[in-house]
Amino acid sequence: MTQYCSMHPTQPAWWHCPRCEKYLCPQCIDHRKGGYQESEDLFFCSACNVKVDQLDPAQFLQPFWNRLHKIFIYPFSSIPALGLILGLAFLASLFNGRGLMAALLQFVFWAVMLKYSYEALRWTSQGRISPPPLSAEVVSDNFGIVFKQIGLFIALFLIF
Image (cartoon, rainbow, N blue to C red; front, top):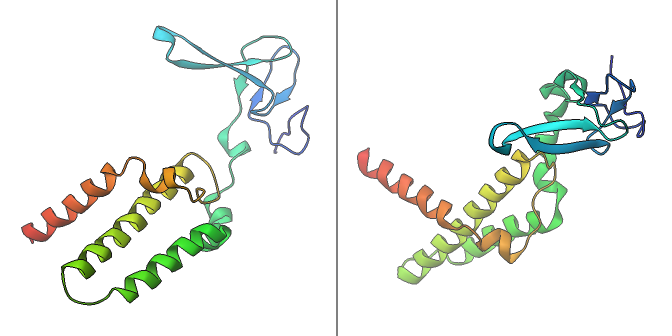
């Protein structure tokens, strides 16, 4: 049975306080670092300052099959992200000729799309359901991962 937060009745509870018997969501918890070398996450009740018990993750996580349909609507949940995808596809089709300049432009369009894909993967791995915002920082920061991936493609191509 799903328990809900004592302070936020629409939010599922993640923790239970053994002293005050309250169920708590992430907004109501006091998060601290502790343990050996301050590397352990500790959670305390914000009302009575007692270490809380974590509830079963099935309590607050939806089953995979209930989230599966969101995979298919993910690209359409952000107009700027959809615009980037369609814009890069259109530009790549415009510069689909022969020559060094066309190949270089194709490479740039492909690299930007690959970088945004990595950013979307990183963004969703942090629990965010919507695509990352389209900004210069998102597309240009940490571009090294793209070059590593391209290097991997080239190495695999040469091996096979």
